Length: 280
Image 1 (cartoon, one colour):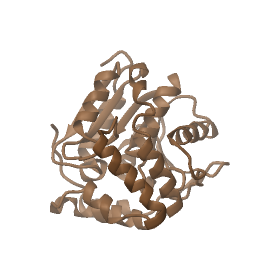
Image 2 (cartoon, one colour; image 1 turned 45 degrees about the horizontal axis):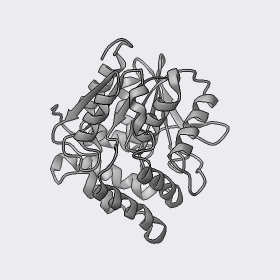
Image 3 (spheres, rainbow, N blue to C red; image 1 turned 90 degrees about the vertical axis):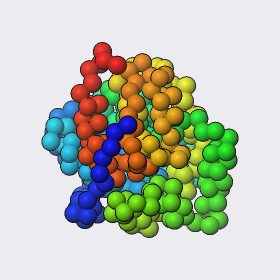
Image 4 (spheres, rainbow, N blue to C red; image 1 turned 180 degrees about the horizontal axis):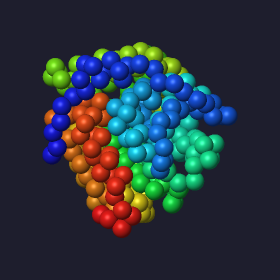
């Protein structure tokens, strides 16, 4: 287990600011910083690329960091209603094409982890390394029923903003700054874009689950010890399947670990980016 402090109030104020964006021809918004080997960051459902601000600031000193707004989030165009995880993975492939990126490292959080895992399973050597932050894997029947019920309720009841906050954060004072940032982003989300992405997230935990054995690049599986949905057991199971898989668990943190424990997450991502292709 690894321990770390949360994002500070000063860092939270800096993170809250909107980052400048460019758009691809098809309408995907992104922010780019730094030079060198590319690293693409994909956020989770209800978030936007600013959720990666601590990682952008830390890693852009040595890498070309590209944080992207997922479809229907931030300033990116939506995908059609009914789009499954496979369509989100295809969207990511089109984004790499439009950016003329032949090979990249990719880190995804939550739904973004599912997209990054799908890309690693199907894009071959185009994905050099994959980092799977707070990502799900083969939910048990109870968890599966709960997430499908939440997805079904969105078109009727709208975006639930308090439920995710209760699941993603503890009641400790150290989580307050990150919780309020996350509340702000949830309040900004496009309801239709959220509904499409959440449905794909709810149904996507097994879509690429059999693919980890074929992912040949270094693979990092990172979550918080107290994440009730993207559990340490899931991370451990996936790491055992990937030929170059490593698992890292941040003690005392939940789902938004890249915001509540930014220093340790930045360090672990830097470690992952230094993995050689022949290392485990």
